[in-house]
Image (tube, rainbow, N blue to C red; front, side, top):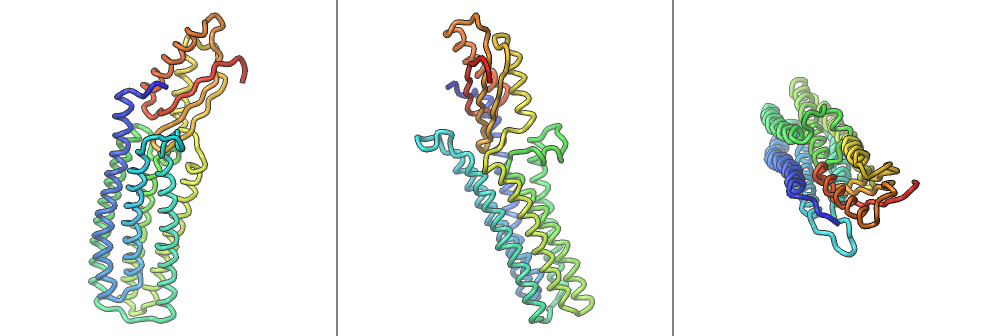
Length: 314
């Protein structure tokens, strides 16, 4: 097996560095916001504020799990895991979706229902709204940092196309959390403001329930997105097309019979069945396959494993 060159390593390191930066932005923002919201919830007695505090603590913990997944995914292959530990990133991303659903969404709905059944007066609503306004700024900065790291990876690809086809689970999760957090903050601002203006604390309880609903929807979307990667998903369509074009352009290959790609965390596994020129000797065919693997790994830095099978039919 021929290892990827220095350019492959640099590219993969750049992708992981982008993910780490996005996770760090979100972690710092969410931890600071969670502490401020906790104090605001205690001071004002707001259920929406408490729901937002729990959401921020859950998000900060989620970023810790995503970072853990990135670190664990770098473990070298061993006898029991010959293709490495790259899929641990997908596992922890799926756990994050579950936490977002249970700890964030369900608790927020529970807190809202509890406030409806046992309403409590609000204290100094303006303090809570000030904290929420500050949280919007910090969360917006976190989202901006995440989008900036995404931009470095997607290049000229349109954002929505990248979002639909990317296999970068950790950035998708951070993006989803940031968007959900901003929506939740605006909902908390609106409902807390209504509660303070009207004096009806039910608005605050409704805000908590709505925030929980948003978190559940986002967590389900993230879970569905990650499920395919956990089961086993091919590489991005553009990478598959690039791989196939390189193989088909090789003058010693008469026909590309079939290719299979599998996303293994940040790396890709490729298996290809090819029909080679019948005039080649066995040694010549081996040399040509080895040269082709080198060319593929130079052109596709994400390619970690390459298995070529010469054959006459699929």
